[in-house]
Length: 258
Picture (cartoon, helix red, strand yellow):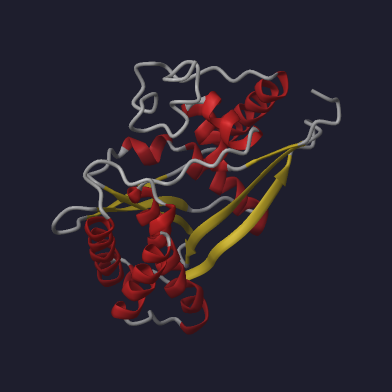
């Protein structure tokens, strides 16, 4: 590639490349958008609903009515229905009902305890010693305790190691330092389970300067691989390398393509 090669990576792009570099290639080089699953659409609409509440709570200090926030979820979720690649066992009615229940549970049990100070803040970070490389992202929520928080909606109880190992949270910390001049006091995942009775699983974690440094070195390595044109497939034993979970399966020569 050209010497003036420019690359802007987001935390989600880093996750995609680590999961499957070839998937990253199809999405970000060939610009082929993979339709979201019902679960992914649920998560996106839930974040829209939570943002509806928190964006005004920064100033008012008060939550919006629970029914109002749930209705924001429903409206956004149903507006996305035709974009979704519904998987086996998923229907708009089933997933929508699960999502509404999760948002209600979050608003009743989590939101009243949170006073936000930053909501949906965009950030960019340049790498001074690596010309052409930028990271960019959006922080969902920082509370008055200076905890950087992210909410997840999952089908089952989370593995606590997810928060401790998450590069995404680490990069959000980098963004927090760019916005505020310092790292967060702590990081927290608020996981809501899509079970009959939704459960709330808060997972608190931390990051050291060594963690930050290691994560930023990884970004540089990924940039060099992309610049060189290295897009190998995922391990064939990985869950992502399957017709069910990869929207590029029939295109990829290492999957079902030719």
